[in-house]
Structure formats: structure tokens, C-alpha cells
Length: 294
Image (cartoon, rainbow, N blue to C red):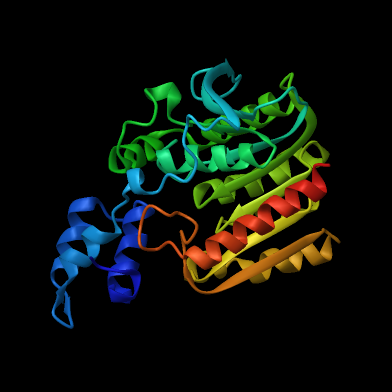
């Protein structure tokens, strides 16, 4: 079995291009197959990086501590005017502080659903919206999901996320306090929500997400907990300007940079996963939400 340390940096870099839609699966595997390192083929390394969702589940959907269901709700100005999300609540009467869990650039896959369940067992009502629902929903594999998400009008897609956030914030079981956590595209969208929602968002935790425009930072009302991977050149290149704007506008923020990690280190369905860093980052996320959403 190939482990993370066995995978050459060049293959990781190709995977990053593939994950973000710069190359397709065929090109990713083809370019990786041209490499051989210490007797290990690049193709084998590339295949090891593809997600294995069945092995990544931490909280069962039948866990007695939670109740989970899929819900539909209105989304004016979005892709179709209607959205669907995975709503997970703790067992009990509530009210509960609310959290929106925003997926990567491929729709609501099993990893993100599991993250919503992880939030619910910690005492939050969590909604994981599926941005692909208006065009048929997450198709069951990341390649088709990535193509579908890229084909959408990005402004309408973000409006769907904004409407999803307002839906769970105003849910009958919600305390009215809302936090957002997102990963990759969802990290950037968490920053977007921080800008757009102002004081209606009480806490924001972007995992390796794109920074907002510096001129928009003044609109942020929520304190930020920024989770960054050390080996993530594209996202980290945005940080100096983002931090300068946060300081200039006297915004509350904390940033953690996790040594030796790569973009996607929280996603436990691929070898990019760093167990120690992911556990620490999640513990910090939950502690932050408990403080800010109390």
C-alpha cells in the first residue's frame, strides 16, 4: 500500500492541478505515469491519491447521537431557485448553534457529509448544501462533479450558498448564531459569506480557501480562524495581502499554518490527509465555534 511519504512531489502537484480542474483525469494519470521514483511508478502514486470515501467515514449516518435528513428550500437568485442540503442535528430538543459546511469544487460528496455529522455530534445543527442539486446533484464521482460545478454560473452558485446559510441560521432548531466552515472552494466561499453576511455570520473557518478581494475585507463582521497548509503555494500566495487588509480594517483573525501539510490535508479519503494536523485543526474549529456561537 502506497503511503503519503511514498508519493513524489511532482505527482502531488499534478493532483493539485487535477483537483482544481486545470487538467482532467486522463491527463493527470498520463503525465504521472511518465514518472518512476525509487522503483514506484507514478501511475501507482496517482491512483493512490484518488479518493476512497468508504474508508473515510468517521461518524455513521445511523449514529444515535444525531438525526440526519435531506431538506429542500428556496434559493432565490440561485441556479434554479431551489436548493437541497444534508441537515444533521444532534439528538435532543435544541435550540442548537448552526453551522454551514461547504463542499469543495465537486459537490456534496461523502466526505463533506461526514464532516456535517462530525459537527452535529459536537452539538451543532449542521447543513451541508449541495451546489449541484439544481443540475441533478452530486453525481456519485468527483470527476463528473467537478465538471458539473465548473459549468455553473459561479455567482448563482455562491448565491445558493448564501441562501443555504440563511436557511440554517433561521431554522426552527437554530439558536440564531451561525458559523461557516468550508474546504478548498468551500474555504473561499466561507470567506465570501464573511464578506456578504456581515454581522449575520458569527464565525468563519476557511480551510485552504481563496482570499476575498482586499477592498471587500472591510465588510467582514465575523472573526476568522484561517486553516492553512504549509505546502500550498497558490493559496498561501494570497495571504500577505489578505492579512494586510485584515489588519488595516482591524478585523479579528487567527491563522494556523500546519507544518508539512498539503492542500486538502483535512480530507481523510486520500493520502494527502495528515491525521495529526487534521485532528488538531478540527479541535480548534470546534473550540472556536463553541466560543463564538455561544
